[in-house]
Image (cartoon, rainbow, N blue to C red; front, side):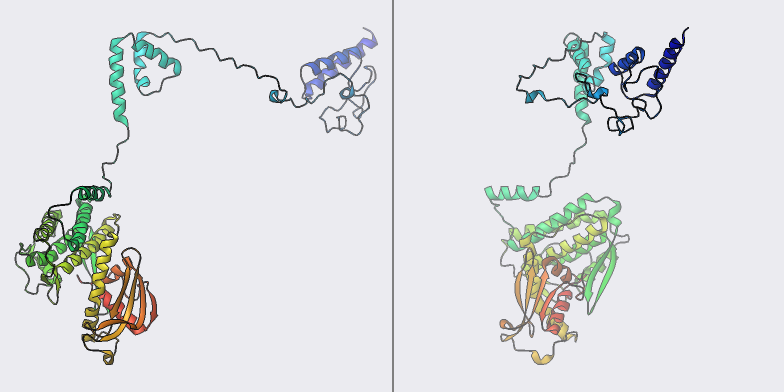
Length: 483
């Protein structure tokens, strides 16, 4: 073999090694490289018999940024990127067909897959997946075509589809809390009752129904959940521990005061001589050898229905029938508001004990409860004054029927309003001209204060004016609470 042939073979071997290193270009460029190597012309323009050093053009193919790349400083003129008619190594961006103005090609729909041909036993095994809509499109078409020809499979598929309808998640059976109100409003709007409930008894009817709905939702074990009854005595709070069932027994025994006044049966077998709410409750608790259980719900529920039914059949009257509470008495209309207030407060105690959401009363019912508390404040102030617990000096006392100092009580929120509270005597006339203080409270916050659930120092009240008068009114509001 000649020396020239040896050089050609060495050059071919070296060129193959360079192609093995990979320059990122395949196909036509690779073929051209091999042709150029065989023909004696390379991309750098050097002859095959001329050795190329590492710094010569065409030798370094590491990329466009290398010394021999398009951007290299030693790139010779006339490289193959500059040859006219040769396609560039980096293709230019394509133009969109929408920019040319030519009509768009009509899309050719994909050919439909051939139908599946399955045996009867295979199609029958697919019925469960078909009923659950878990089959592919081809399987679904095959199963549905088979159902038109096979009666036994069609009957089984129908049964499976009906069974799938029973697999949906269980829906809540609880009724909408507002459903009762909407139904009653709709019924009363079309035809009013022949024997309507008096307006002053409506709050008690509503709060007893809400409490009864709460009791229906709690379990047997929750009837023994601990509950702490709280109220205010003197200048400090006090409490009594009981259970959910004990709270209902307390409401049953105190509601019995109204029942006795109406001539109904007394829930206590041996009524207490004192006939105060606390004494009657202790007597009811002590009369049982075992703590009250959920069985107390039935007597309380029946008694609340009898109270509402009796005042309704009696025509409501004037609501002036006196109801004694031991140390004081209230007319029947105010007593029913008082029982509605106690029902709501103790329902909140039960709801807190069993972690149950509970909302305040309707605004018009809440307004009646706040109005009752505001009207009872002058008597509570006088009682605290007689007990030496008031900070108001005796020199401010005035005769009954005479104008005296007044405090403006502003209740904000739903059920709120404004009341002028006489400070000097229960029989004094409240006068805006002699207003010495102004107190602003939220409606629910004021009711919590009157229930003894918030101390006067902690009540979030806006205050302006005589500080001693404001303190006396706040403490008098807390003293309205009792067991």
